[in-house]
Each structure stands twice: as structure tokens, then as C-alpha cells.
Length: 290
Image (cartoon, rainbow, N blue to C red; front, side, top):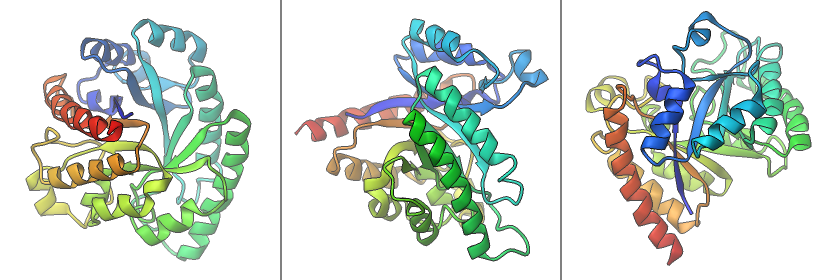
């Protein structure tokens, strides 16, 4: 069955800490959470104004705290853009550290992606080969911990189906999967429905994002991704695509998490989104159950 989660990015603008996100999840009967990982510490995080987790925190202690709220991780976001020239030094270490931490925290999905721009002066083949080497090293670690590495459409390469196809086929392993994103594929100028249909058997996690009318009119085809929906899910131009994507999820009997990525506004906007998505999930689960 499909379960609902949310990304703590929703509360970046509210300067919430991670525990406030857990409290919101408990109040709203949501049992899965996705958040960014910080490999180190920062003043903003330390003062309690950032809703993500540091890999320097005790993962077992945090796991116990989350259990008290009835919440667990659906995925950890370790999406340092792997197409950048410095990714072998920075991104690979960041992801492998996240894998080991995730295992102890009770999380078995890690999100990855590329940068929105093609690196200057490099060929596509050179960049793809660099990313392949990184994913090979990352998957060696993931195999020991039985953690799924997702590729999210969010950048220059990953939002183009032909490149996503090549990336998902870098290695023949069930641990290399895709995190579908309805908003990123749309704002990049793709058809989210066709994108999901093409890769439906590789999907292990889903981001649900709508797109505002004004942003779509101004920037569709110019961006490769957006952090969160700036309109309540169900109120934007991506509604029909989201519904049709759920048709595909129903047809394949998707058994996993759909994670809401929407500006929280301290609660109201994401709560409106949650109501809309919850109804859609209930309808879809009924169809899956047959």
C-alpha cells in the first residue's frame, strides 16, 4: 500500500528544528519523514533553526526519539550534485557517510542527484563516466548495508529521460532505483506522466509537488527542479499530471512512500496539501486492493 510522508524542507522558511517536524507529523497522523543530512554542524542547525539532521548526531538516540512520535524515516536526502567536478571528493564521501548513518537510524533509502547545469568545458560522456564511478563506489557501500540508492530527476542530466535511462543502467543491481518527482519533471519541461511510465519499474520513492501557475508560465523549461511547491498541492497547474501518475502507481501496485514537498508556511499550506494528497492516496489504495 501507499503511505504518506513529507520532506522537512517544508519548514525551512519557518526555521523549525527537526523535533518540531516530528511534532507536526504526530499531530497530523503522518508516520514517515524525509530530511536532509548535514555532514558536520552549523550554527543555524545548532541553534535549532534548521529542520534537518546532522550525521554527527547519535543515530540510535534519534531513532528512539522518532519512535516515541510514531515516525520513521522514509528516505535521507544526500543529494550533493554528482555531476560537479568536485563530486568525487565531496559528494561521494557525503553519500557513503549518509549510508552508514542511515543504517543505524533505521532508514534504507538515500536520495541522490546531479546539478542543474552541465559542467563547463566537459562532454556529456565525461560527466556520465565520472558519475558512474561515483555510483559504483557508493553502491559497494550500499550493498553491505542493504540500502537503496535513488536517483532523483532534479538536474541537467537526470531530468532528461535518455540520460536517466543510462544512469539507472550504470550497474545491474536492485539497489539502484529512482525517486520520481512530479514537480521537477514538470518544471524541466518534461511530461511527468510519460517520465514515470518509462521508469515505473525502477521507482522506490516518490516526491509529490505541484507547480504554481505563475512559476510555470515564467520558468517551465528553464529550470530543472524546485525545492518545494510554492502552492498547495492540488491548487497548481500540475494537478492532472499528479492524478495520472497515481494511476500508474495503482497499475503497478506501488508499495512505498509518497513524500509531500510543499512550502509549509508554518503549517497551513502543507496541511492543505496533506488533505488533498491523503484523499488521492486513499482512492489509489482502494484500487490497489482491488
